[in-house]
Image (cartoon, one colour):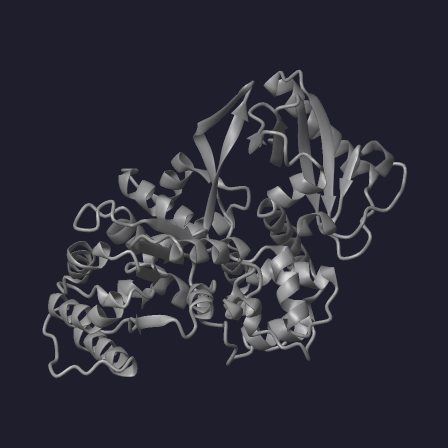
Length: 478
């Protein structure tokens, strides 16, 4: 498939799609993931010129507009339709008749339905009709490859992947497409003519989170600072209104989700489910559990275990905002005012420095696999979690602990600095205090390796000699 050469990363997904096409079996593949992550681009690139039929839902369109999109797609693929279907059941009947000659040739019949949550307007019966199309006809042919895709992750999971109706257990494969890693982001930028340092690439990741569409908006002729002002702080910036669009696209009732996200943004260390209920004034946790599960599936929030004594517990887990663009927006949306050069004018201020430190922590937490790879412990069984002291005042907390099967624990401290990081005696004492507090309260007998992860390299001084494991941002690139 020659088109795949233009795709950055996605090697695993490309290999899986190629395997499904060669399987000799009917395949029903559901692709989902965060808005703007590159789902449609990936599928169109892999199957360019090979699709028997493809149609895309109209975002926020009504039933008539969705039928118009269907008819336009039928016309585009050369299928003559002499009637306007009044239902989706009839529309899929027309599609079946149009595809029948293609299927009988024995060639691959690849059908791509994009943004399918949009087709499911109130009372339209789209999901039921799709299920009937697959069960009654498409699933009978080994050369049929049906790919459905959508950004509304919760709809995709509820109505397609975990359907209890006609599509129950009919999906043959599901694929969740994630944002680029730092390494993939670097590859993308280099391929598109950017000559940025790794520090600038890490900083861009702090704001745009490896989301393919956001990266595509960057201008290689501008510095990162100029790009941020142009895309976000300028009154006509293309990402200025992205936050609202993002949640509106993913969730039909976005307000409860943004309420949770914005609450977590104010509590950088995260909150337990009980703490969330208290802050949101919710009497029942049933609805909250569903909201949190949906945010987890969409990649906005991470849920991590906590350690008490020698037990790592799921109960009392902490929820933390991990979507970097949302974190950036919530932190700065109300601060810029009419200053279209806010970022350039506030570099080095306490406001931006505090945010950079917080965002760098999140970038590290999104690249634990790469950190383990750099430490050469990726082949050792391990689990990561957070820890909060229940005895010390103020309460000591460690955001990342890598607990290894070889009886070693990496206690990770994350520090951001745009230039060589100099560890002060005071900060060194604080790290040692947190380490010993963790040892005492958990009662662990394991070897504890204090692991310092800085952005720029660590300066050598008397305090740095006390750190047994030192990493910088290069570790995050794997």
